[in-house]
Length: 108
Image (cartoon, rainbow, N blue to C red):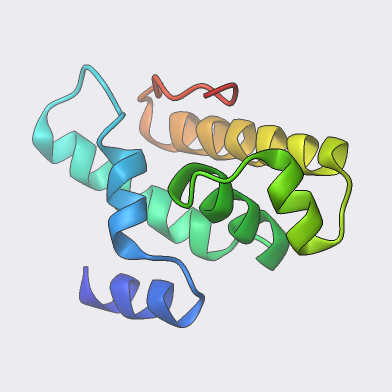
């Protein structure tokens, strides 16, 4: 996990935040959850910078879409679209690769 952690830190993603997402993967044993979490981290690292920033600001800094929009110079609607599409995309990719459906909702 160390190479992934290093890569995440270089891209501005806090590893603890990825574990927070991974802990929401329900109904699987710890080994499967760890594999899924590792893949999720790899996928998050590959996201465009704006998508990573929106996820971090919304889910981990607990900022409202209006605050994120102001900070990034985008509209609230754009922030909502970026967040929802990114979460849905991550869910789809993880589920397709692992066969594990996530309980995380893009509306959360």
